[in-house]
Length: 102
Image (cartoon, rainbow, N blue to C red; front, side, top):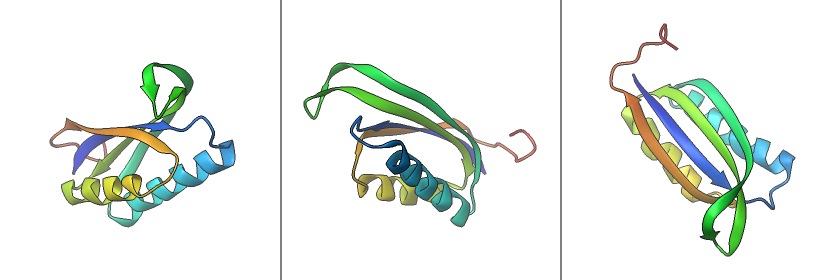
């Protein structure tokens, strides 16, 4: 398995319950598809450098997980179809990460 990180920029208009529902959905996809969550790091509400959808603030969340490569495509497909997510980026952190390292 490989180690990945996905950074999500969520709408500031989402309630805390809506954010948690989205994150629970994404972590469920990771678990269902054979991955393993390492951390879910909430960075909180931040000012943006430029407007995104005419908004100058956003809520950042970083997901770090171990996963096979096809899982990333499924996760990103679900992220694209979700409301309340302005932007996201996924980065491969390590090629050969074992579960003991996490």
